Image (cartoon, rainbow, N blue to C red; front, side, top):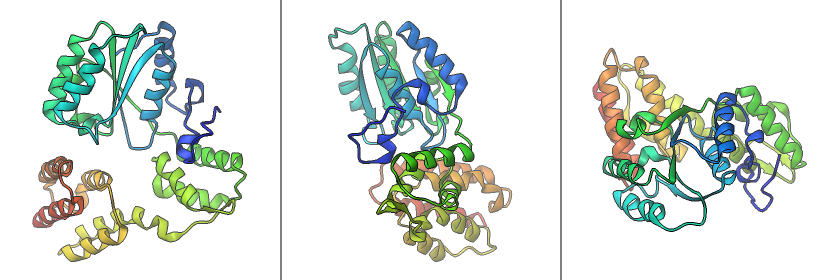
Length: 305
């Protein structure tokens, strides 16, 4: 493994830099390897759960092509001005390289207007500019964009592979650990390897991994929320207290969890659950206080009872 030793975060220090060190998704690696051999790629969309290597794969590609590249995190820069100014400006600028690549990370945060503008940019600069989009939810990418890209689903490694990888990293860091502690972290945060490694780093002191149960509270809150929603008469204040105690910063995982488990509380109205979650998940992109937005969704879900 080639290490990025200048980084202090484990997730960055051990981010693979070449395709051979990327774990899993062998069918995708084979396709990418062929592209790299031609020093060209298709426009690509990588989608799948958070923390499973979509951004890593995109960065491996640009680092192993003879290209100039632009990286944009669309969760921070989601508006049409990002496409018109930064992306279009980069694509139209002079270059000494044969190829340009734009990485739009978390592209499912782009507004509909920004996505429509991106479609036009892709068509205008198709001769020498390629685009790599990553997203958790490919259904949030408009069809005209999907039709102009090769869409590839990133499949998470198994729990056993994640645990093995964490153990290897701790060995490289000369950190003492118990196998049971690695299993606890893996079970809590799988398939999000990034979250696993961040938790490992938070739980390591004096070269020893020690599980702090308070660090893991936030991962349990979704189960508690679902349990309360499943009651005959869910209590809004109980759910609010659960979310507040967990100090949740990103509610996308909760929204997906509530969608995936709608049958346990929706009383046959799963369609309305999907409508509400889609509406409030989208609104969350524009809300300063995301907890208020989440609790507004919870109110709607309770009304379904």
